[in-house]
Figure 1 (cartoon, rainbow, N blue to C red):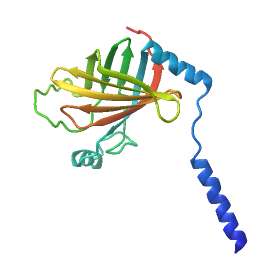
Figure 2: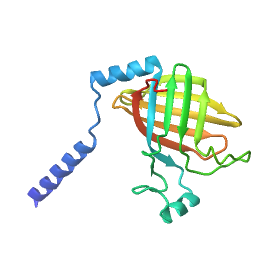
Figure 3: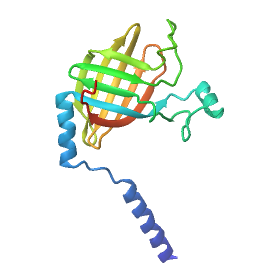
Figure 4: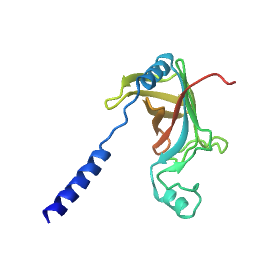
Length: 184
């Protein structure tokens, strides 16, 4: 009985130790992230959208209208070419949106996603409190809609964006981070 207890304890300890392992960025990854942030030239290609799950999104998911492998609260958008970009003091985004419009105003069926371009207001940049990375916060307006954006950039070339809108429910995006080079 004692041997069984020790075996179970050892396995539990091993699993617990494995779960607590964290990613350690290499010095090269940290330097590359620092350079992108310093140059203010990077792009996040969105691969996942995480809208606030609501009854209407659950209904869409239950009807089978979301991409394969997606749920109402986590939608695969890797084929959408959605992006968030920072070049110098300007930001630009073209991201698909899943959620509910909460405020009236004009509705343009040609522009249903999150789209904005401009110079951010109340911009702040700070190091991440955990791990290696940065947190960028700013506000930006596009027409009558105002966005509050929090972007978390990590040395392993991943990023997370939290988007709050004056007209829609909140949404989060995850994606890959890369230096931005002019293609146009």
